[in-house]
Image 1 (cartoon, rainbow, N blue to C red):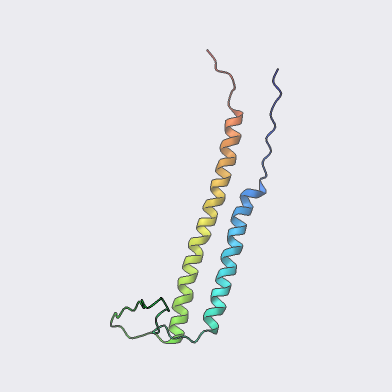
Image 2: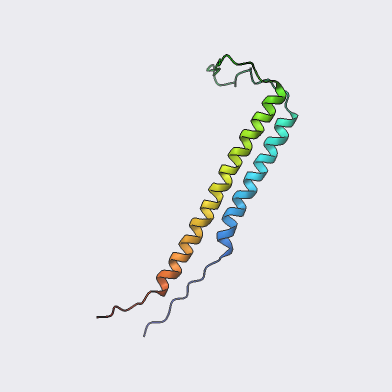
Length: 113
């Protein structure tokens, strides 16, 4: 007679995947927020990109520094929510693996003929 195999799952890992992701995202957003608040840089100055400055003239009135700060933070918040969704998706995938494994283990081991 075969001995049963015991499989243990650590349920906290499913939750921790998202919580780790959430912490990273909130830390980054916090850093971005305070960096933007402390900044008085005018974005008309292109990024230093090895003699390949990228500038686009859309013929609109340039934003003030305060408008640039608001726009930059709004963009960062949108990206943070996208990142939250990615973290939730990772957790749901972990939960799905766990549930599928449990369901497979409950299937009958013998076929009825």
